[in-house]
Structures are given as structure tokens and as C-alpha cells.
Image (cartoon, rainbow, N blue to C red):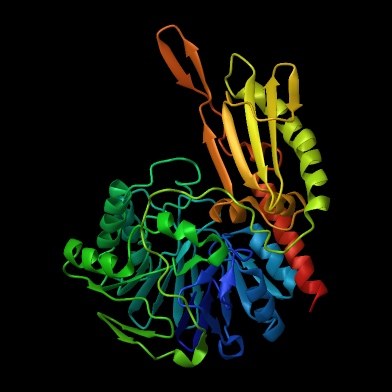
Length: 444
């Protein structure tokens, strides 16, 4: 979350006002609350729909304070939610657009991700680029992009770049993939940050860790500390000032110079007691799956709904998708559902004749998914989405789906998180968003 003050305007980027987000899976580091009434944004920019950038309670609070603030986003779902929460002026602006304001220019920069952008802000000869989470191909892509953007705003360079910096291993552990240090990914991140050629760089985003119930994930997800990144960037780009990200700090950007006042915006932030730095990279043994049941729901009422969904929507979805998987035989999809006390297992035998469900786990499975029961129930009921469950480490998946022909083995085109065949990821996000908006409005 960043607040930009330029040309008498206030632009709030990806507001995240409270200490927890992503349906209670993550907390800010350090834990803090932002004094919403002191922000007074003229524009609220929401770069994409990931919940650490698209936080519905924060948008709801801002709409209550000032429904006349203009929301700008590339995503139609974000736009719908902002309007539903009470903002009167919402604009969908795709990547690659220039917006002229009084004394200020904005350029939305593209990403390889869908409905996602970064934003360049230029005013009085100073230029800042908030890359947010936008993904670019490589360093040459960065140079090509800036070769178009900078001339369009009559600028020669970026003074301050807020960049991607953490080669996150968000799902490697739970999908049984390699969890060692991602050398290639980190090499590319450093090269892209250096390619910006900015006068100063600040590490952006990644200012969160898992809450205590899921904090074992922090040993796998965050391979690089901020201090390490800043030292590495200084070596990779000696002409760039590598500045730390300071909660409550102010970065004053003028042409050719960036000055950090560590306490310049401290009045906007209320810090809360925090744990010691939880993001220590220790990518070793992954703990057994457990169900934290964060809302203490009744297990006896959840289990029948989950069982019915597996036998119904999931089985039907897999049966419809099987012809596109490239299999020459029926496949065995094994599901383990772990509740606080119960442990349920199923195998779905899926082939040309449809799907047959057996109440046991076939150890000769082709694909295996294990999931925390209460969180699966909440996804089925539209009260959270798959991203919450996966990033909490409460959805595990593995595949050995292949077909054998004389002289060769070929992997099959089957999504290892095959529970998504019962409810797609995008549909789950939309349902959960609509449910949360309705809940916020009902309780206001």
C-alpha cells in the first residue's frame, strides 16, 4: 500500500488498512493499522484482484469515509465491488493508458498477468514507477517498456522505482516441488530491477507473513530477506540507491533525487505488537496437514456437504474434463479431507464411462489432493476462495498422471489441484468476492 502526494492530489495505491488480510491467512509485517480518516485520497488505484492488493474491508471503509473518491482499476470484478461498496465514480483503465490530471500524469504499465498493471506517476519533472506485482518477461522487456513510457511523459529516467524483489515459493512445498533457493528466478528479478535504471529503488509488496495458524509456510515462501536484496541490488546496479521499505516513512522524489524520511508519514500508521521476524528461510520437512478450523464451525454439519460436493460437482467436473486430459485409460483421483477430528478419503475413478467414487484412498493414485475440511467447506459455500486455502498450506497436491507408449512416457495435461475441476479458481474468486461484499454491506 502506497500513498502518493503530487500536484495537490492524493493517490492511494492498493489500500490495505488493517493488520490481517486474505481472509485471515496473512498479517502485515510489522503488524499495523492505517488511520483511514487521515488518508483523504482523491483517487484509489487497485492494481489487480489478489487479496493483498484488493482488500474489501479496506475499500468498504474508504467508501464510507468518502464515496466521491475515484476508483481506478483494470479489473471488472474490482470495479463491480467498488461500486457495490458505495464508490460513485469507478473507472476501468487497461494497461498501457496515459491519464492526464491537473499537473500530474499517470501511465498504467502492462503485465503478463491478466487484468493487472503497475503505474508510473510523473509530476514537476519527477518520475516514480510502482511496479506492484506486474510480471515482465526479462530485463530487455523492462527496457523496451520504459523506452515507450518515458518519452510519452517527456522524461528521461525513473527517479524512484518500487519493484518486485522476492522470488516467492508460494506453492512449491504444498505441490511437492523443489523448495531450494530459486537461483534463476532471483537472477531475473535482480536483472529486471537493475534494468529500470532508476535513481533509487525500494522493495515493494511482500510486506506480509502468514498468521500463526499457518506460519510454518513462512519457512518455504520467502527465500530472500529485504536486507539481502538491497545488498545484492547494490552490487548488481552500482549506480542505484537501494532504499529500505519503511512503514510510516516518506520518500520525497524530486528530479534526480530521492530522500527517505523514516518517520515522515508516521502519523498515518498505528503499529501493533508484532512477533519477531517470522520469514526465515528453512525449506526442510513440511508438517502434516491439519485443519485449523479458524471459524470453529461444526464438523458434523460440514462433512455431509463436503462429501456431497465430492460425489457431485467434483465427480461431474472431472468426468467432463477427462476427454481433454489425453489419457488412454481411466485415471484415479484420490482426495483426503482432514477435519479437526475426522479424516475422510475418497478415490474418483474417471474415464470414458464417467466418474465412480469409492470411499477409500487408492494408493496407486494418479493424482492426489489433500485439503483441510473446514476451509474446503467455506470454498464450497462461497465464503473464501481456493487461493486462501492453497497459500495457507491447507491444500496439498501431487501428480503422477502419465501415459506409457513403446519407448516413451508422456505426462498428461491434468491440473494437479484437481479440486478446481469441481469449482474453477476464477469462479471461486468471484463467488467469495460477492459474498464478502454482501456481508460487509449487511453489517454496516
